[in-house]
Amino acid sequence: MFLPVSPRCLDAALGYEMVMNRAISAIRNCFRSIVRGNGPTSPGTPIGGRQDSALRPVLLASERNDDYQTLQALLQDTKWSVVRAFSLGEVFSFCDCLVSPVVLVDRHFQGSNWRSTVSSLLNPAASRCLILLSDVFDSYLWNELVQHGGFDVLARPFERSEVLRTLAFAQKHCEAGWPRLHLAHENGASPAGGAK
Image (cartoon, rainbow, N blue to C red; front, side):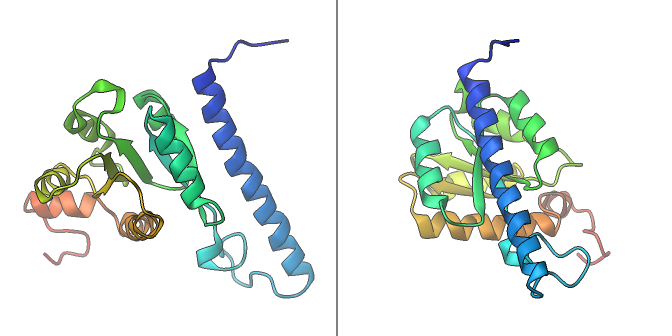
């Protein structure tokens, strides 16, 4: 039976399939290393045995093909894998399924104002690090994004070292509770742990 699938859904499914194929490869490698006696030794150790070797998908919400192709090329042979979403609904669906809370959003995603996109994606219960993709970067844009709960701005054209640094930094902050702790601090509440 053939089900009609839109090209956007197919592209998203292929991106997810690539993530799953890389995860399966990592599982195979993990089992091979266990058989050889040098596999993970403690429960909770990520697939691959080391904390740094776990596959980490990053969600890209952009209608621009050049963003997707450039990021795919820059992140090839790294621990990051790009999964693409074409609508806010897809972003929410993928965020519920993916391990990585790092979301890259084009400043003009779906022709909307980036502020409304950021506020719809970030809520008090979410622990997503939202990185805005923009053709321009200035301290005013960055400051306003952070005030809205976003994490950082990546300016085009993307540079591999900057993309990798930003993703790694965002991942660490998400694991520590960003943006909940940041927003609680901005609103005058005590962050988790009681210290302000």
